[in-house]
Length: 452
Image 1 (cartoon, rainbow, N blue to C red):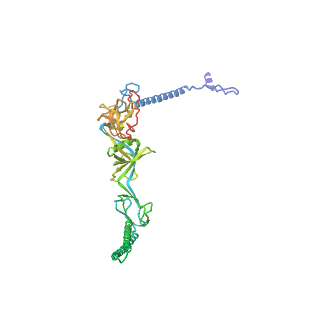
Image 2: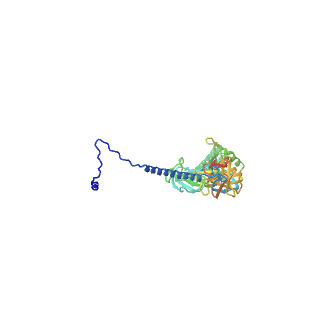
Image 3: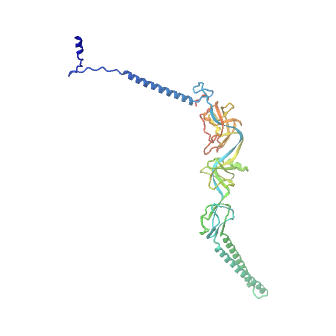
């Protein structure tokens, strides 16, 4: 019975909150392990990022920092000394020329503007524009008929005066006989003699008129006064031309030979004058606008008689045969005047020359492919080669490219090749400069242990 009562008892029902009483708070579940997990993941990510970035910087620093000579790194610790690839050349024994260079202008050896010397109608043109003509060739013709008429008139006047003189001379002979017989006075005979002389003068005047008419008639045939090249035609056939016309008919320029006028600084004048007084001919070479390709060769012809006070330069004139007609009037060229030659020097490319606190030097490569600094004395240099009087011997190997990566004692991998040519408006043009247009290399110093 008791068992049945226990089974029949209803389940306890949660008591509803009584109005006016607060409900009891439910217990809150703790989530601290979730925040702990998030913080751990963030810490691991930060550690991984900073560790990988530090390793990358260390690798880059070790790869970019070259080691000092003798196999030591930047901090003096033993390290790897890399082999530096460079371009080298062999020093030669030879001569170095001394050039004075300047900008020049090509000018025609002779320039003639052909004018008509008489007035008339231009009836024909016997040349083509741009044609080469020789002296005496027919160029144009003016209507000759008016001048032919003038010539015939002069010839008629001459014939008339000659006939009158002949009659006056016959009368003079008769008057001489009559005067000898005492028939006429001497005054009448003298008057007749003077009349003969008057006709002699008239005949000479008529002859001069004929010569003038012939000369004017010859001017109707216009010929070339010089040999050269004809420019553009200035007057067409059919036009009236006059001797007073300012423009002329055409222009002829003599191109063979041809001249080049150029300027040099006044400080270089004594050396040029001394060479000319010695009786030698100074060779002159004309180069293109880039000063790289040689166009023609000639000789110095003369020097101007004064110095330009505004620029401090003086003018010179050179003559070129111009057989290939490569030089053209008013063309700009770079002129190289050879004034002297330094002989028996050790010649190296000018790119091998370096400058630093210790002076002028080069990097010489020995048989062990080790670059050594050698102080040199530059006797003369051009835009391509430098002549050394000491420091390097013929046959030595010098570095001509890649010096910015070298120090004294650096191991190199030499390759023979062509250096980069020095550029600039005055490259190799100043003989007083020991190393013209060679950039200073302050980084390439023989100081041992310096970081590069």
